[in-house]
Image 1 (cartoon, rainbow, N blue to C red):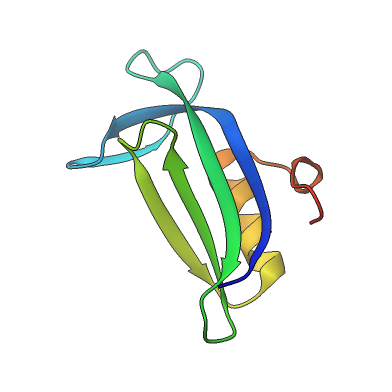
Image 2: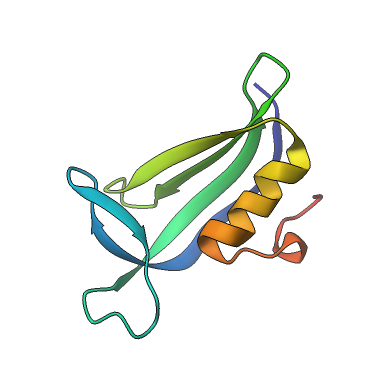
Length: 90
């Protein structure tokens, strides 16, 4: 599996838990908490791409599948607010 770009320990405000569902939280969400996350855009081994994310403590994780590399970076921006400029070598 090839990693196209990765970000280590980027702070992300989240709400929820792995067992019951979680997502990025707005700053105004009182149930939100900030955790550092590792993000990577990789290939899936079949010609498509994955956006893979995991909190540094391992408590939250997930991935999304994308047809194109551009779609993976766009998803990172839409879901987590990570702009294309934040990705090294993107």
